[in-house]
Image (cartoon, rainbow, N blue to C red; front, side, top):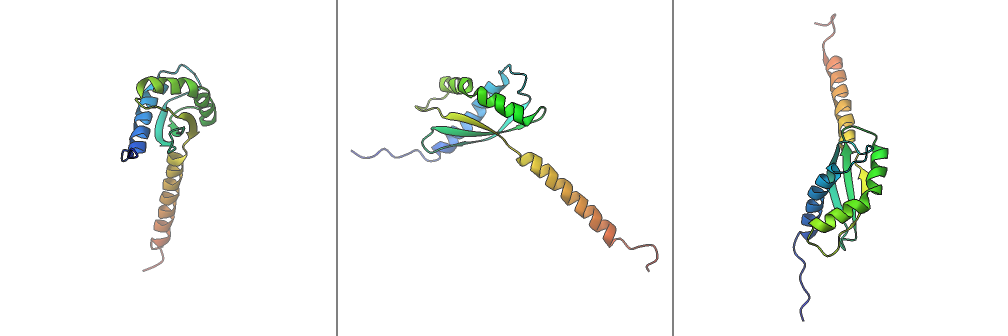
Length: 128
């Protein structure tokens, strides 16, 4: 008997589906600590046992929200179990994603450096 070949990119497709379904499920949560959450990415382990869920937050405290989402992980996993057609639904681990925050900080630093360079390169009043 030949070993069953794995489906190409299945992990990515499962992660993508989990990301879409979680976005809907999180919106249904009534916890006041969970603000306007955006699920940025989902990384699933090869055995589908665990999924790291990266999220960003428009309003609210990221630490509080992370705690609340991890407390709701069992409920959310149950919701995924009903939606996903896979044998193993991963255990969810929520992690605040600082990528967007860092990108904004870097953009501000670049803008500041460019403004400083423009001031330094501008000819001063006494020069001809």
